[in-house]
Length: 134
Image (cartoon, rainbow, N blue to C red; front, side):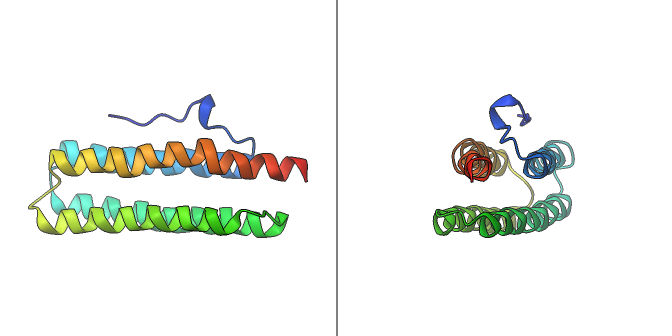
């Protein structure tokens, strides 16, 4: 299943929205590589890239929150840590399997795509609103 950046995910912060689009693209690339290649090495490379981009994106978000004095930054950082843990668990799944299985793809959908969409719609939109109002 392909993730799509739509209006429900727009925060109004151009930089963050563009990074979210890129992040969703990386998730789609990972899922596509799993569905077409079925090779463990390809999935690991895509997961590496997703992990690296996630670190970059979370750093940018947290820097913005520090700059605007966002009062909920600690909670937001905890959310980011949970996502990073989900990525680590995906690595573990790949190590245990001979390649990306349907269960792995389902875990990507649930623990990455669904989590990200919920996070953007709640936490990230709250940050963007705070930034606009302060």
